[in-house]
Image 1 (cartoon, rainbow, N blue to C red):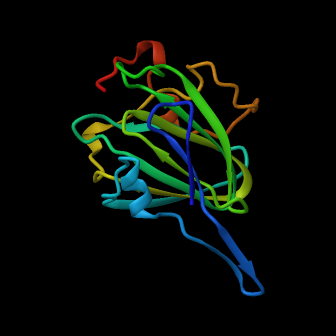
Image 2: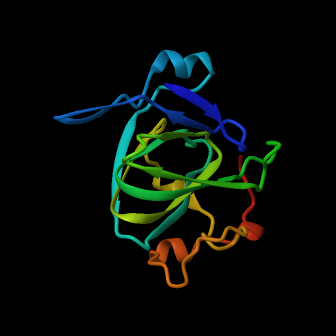
Length: 178
């Protein structure tokens, strides 16, 4: 697996080998020894998946301290534009966003550091995203920043967005606890 650091400190693009033959495809999405060599967490305790239609935006989500978590995410079907926003006050990339394309076809995954908000736009349906996280869901620490408040161009005029995601505070109104 090739692991490349992204412009947001502590976030990585994982590029595993994709094996394909007459049966289909095989992708290894986690190699603990490679993660540990980079100081990345491998103590994932919950796994989620979401399916989305094209034009759906989910985000920008995170869990606040003391229940913050790192995430390992990959697109198992379809394709997405994945967006990360650094909320860590002492990070050199604080307030910066970074986006890239993930697809089932590429097999690529992301390691997202704790303190980085995460969201995505489904570009090819059904977009099936798998999330592995290093802390259990804690509803009282489940937070977000409004998807349209940090200068990222999602490229959609009428996205499908949940009421919850519409009501998150703007980045300018969010006081980071990271």
